[in-house]
Length: 103
Image 1 (cartoon, rainbow, N blue to C red):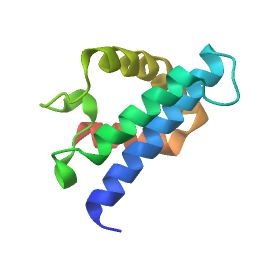
Image 2 (cartoon, one colour):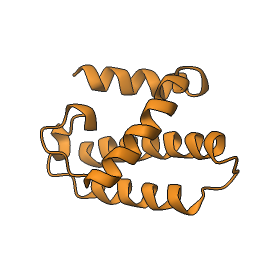
Image 3 (tube, helix red, strand yellow):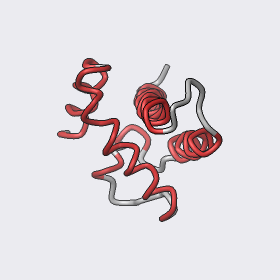
Image 4 (cartoon, rainbow, N blue to C red):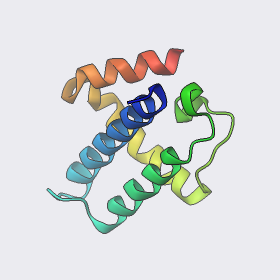
C-alpha cells in the first residue's frame, strides 16, 4: 500500500465511521439510511479523486473545497455531531485525526 492509499484509506475509514455514528444516533437506524448512504458514496468519490494525494490535508484545512455546497453542508453537520463523540467511541482514530489536522 502506498502512502497515498494509506492516507486516503484512513480518511475513508474516518468519514465512514462518522457518517455511520451520525445515522445511528440521528436517524435511529442500524444500517445507513438512503441519505447517509448517498453522502458516504459522495465522500468516498471525493477522496478517491483528491488532487493533493500524499499531501492531502484534512478537509477543514483544504484550500480546494471539492464538495458541492449541498454536500459540504451535510458533511459539516455530520462532523460537528460525530467528531467530538469520536473521542469516546473511537479514541485512537480521533487522536490520529486530530494530529493529522494539526500538520
